[in-house]
Image (cartoon, rainbow, N blue to C red; front, side, top):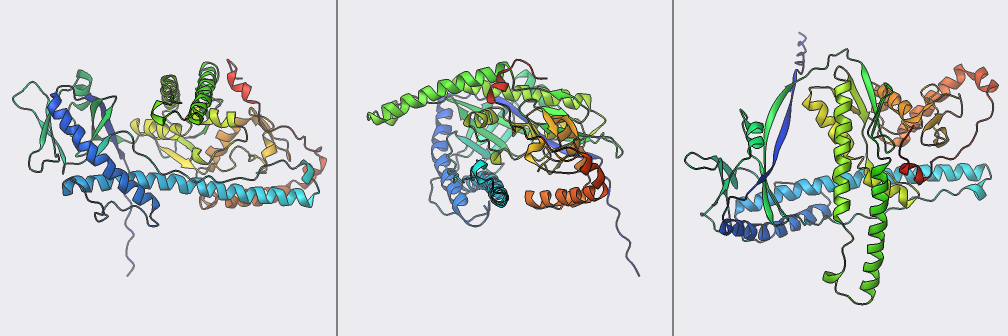
Length: 475
């Protein structure tokens, strides 16, 4: 007798975790804050030791790792330090593995291009540089942070005082926990009204001030219908977001690009001065720092602009299913240093995270697809070539002559990849390219006469000069 297959229950809601940040612990007396400083002075080095251990180990980080290092912390605090280090190391190792895989694919692509140039006898014009790999540095924990759970930090509701909560923290003095008062601002109270707090809390110290972060779970009903239209979203520097519906949101052009150029020149001058003083034997502690407040302020400004762009996109496409690229910024490289500088300053890696978060808050469906060759693939004949992008703004296929605005075309390509199981099954970019070129060959067989009637392709430069980012507007 055949067993009936269980029908999978349709997902009608999704759970998101919201954080309540910027809770300043200013009500505590200096003695209690000093006890926190003594705790983190032992906790942070221990967390650093385990982070280094997990990053250098051949096996994956294990938060249940047996204790290795000796410490004055209690067993519970020791375990919390191991769990925090395992999370940091896992993130670092994942990003490093993705970057190394992208490097290997670049090497294979370079070897293929070089072999093609040799076969065609044009090595004299082949100026492409061979990709190089720079090993990642081990992470260094500089900001005092304790990612705690109820085993070491408990938030207790205040009953008979002017404070809202009491934070009970395990310290170096076993059996004598520290009780820190917590006073919430009005916007904190509004955010937490009717909510049940999670068991996890975060304590961190910045500029000599201790801050507390709380969190709670929220169930958001799904609003996107199964037959909702798909909207592709392309991520870029010229426009942070470009949709397949021909809308663009946010830009790194104009004022932000000029601020970045000014800040970059300032940091380069500081770096030269630092190198000169270092040669003269000036101690490291007295050398000028290459970081600046203007750089940090610009970084915050860029992320705010990204958040505004994402919110505007979500507002305009409430009834749609968003399809965006699974972007790996760590593996992105340009030939020119100035272009790499613009790439990092634009914080493209922040966009997919913010897009996923904004869609989840509104109960919208958002999915990632493989982004490989989405900017180079022709939507008509599936031909893939760098020269299909003669400049940053334009896409023009060398085979069939299809032309469109480059970012809009890329967004349409991403939207078309949703539901493409063969493409989703590809494990590397080389497999993606092989599949696309197979589809191109099938298209050529059906359109052989049209290809013969077309004229020879026109070769143009691939990238616009860096000065384009300093324009006040972008068409």
